[in-house]
Image (cartoon, rainbow, N blue to C red):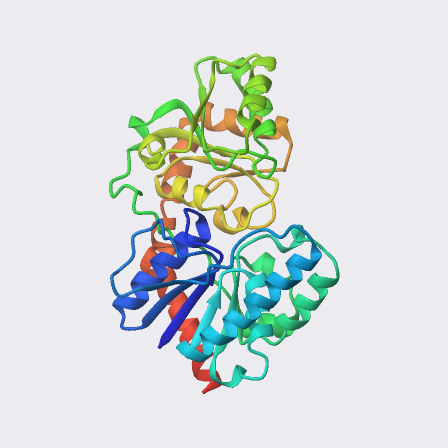
Amino acid sequence: MKLVFFYGNLLRGGAQRVMCELANQFSAWGDQMTLLTMDAGKCEYELSPSVKVQGLGLAGDSANKLESLSRMLNTLLALRRWERQERPDAVICFSTHLSFQLSLALTGCRDRCSIIASERANPQFRRKGALDRVERRYMEKLDGIIFQTQRVSMLFSESLRERGRVIHNGLFSRDIPEKVTDYGLRDRKRICAMGRLGSQKANDTMIKAFAIFARSHPEHVLNIYGRGREGVQEKLQKLAEEQGVGSRVVFHGSLPDVLEHVKDAGMFLMTSRFEGMPNALMEAMACGIPCVCTDCDFGPAELIEDGVSGLLVPVDDVEAIAAAMARIADEPGLGEKLSEAALKIRQTHSREEICRQYHDYIEKTVNRRR
């Protein structure tokens, strides 16, 4: 098949990594692979020489509505010219907004190219308005759609669900260690968190919960990996100091080899207010780290069986989060049980398994059109 993955850019990020890993594997299986981006096409991930990258050079912000309209028109014309030249069997858009733009651009010539969307975000947090309603109508014309979770799929129409498929994220990180540290050898006083600092990850809730936990666990340290917008880390550091744990909450910033620093931890903490399918949680589970995670929409509950492979707690409930942390810290048997069960994700979400699910679904969708 001649396949194209379409996204805004190929900078470091969850969707970008999935695209690149899938493209590498599909290329190894004999498909002609192209990665199409809205920007100039710079890629920050390693790609097979047989994978082609094309940048439309159209990325950027608009100063006003007129400029936004002009940019949209240029995008549609560029996409139409590109499709006429390349003639792919299918384009998989890793953004529902981009699938709308591509569908609009190819109006009248959809008979030769399948368009499949991959819903990567939480649709409940998408801006509502006239454009969203138009996009929803155009989505009904898609040949297929890939949902990250079952719960996300239920937010879409029955006809889209019938044409779609739920496929979780895979363990695509090359940094996941082959050998897992035995539970008895872990640094059980070390608690880790990974992810972009900000409201979504609820780092404020995380610090407040840790402060409650720390009163009865004076030797534990919370290590936070990730960065946010300017000033966010400083505000969180100030909050930690106000909570009396300033010296026990350590911000490490964004590290390229973060799993090397996290893999031996005794506990992983994720306090998100919403998620898609959190790669950080999956990677922590693949390292065998006992996890405490909020039961937020939408991904965690499809990864963790509460009390078996991790502990799920209510969103923004600092007392419940602190209590779950205390359970793992105080009950070695529970921690070991969670660690062993979490490791099953290495089979259920392996790179090979998820690549095969994507390929089978795309091939089926393309053949349905032929």
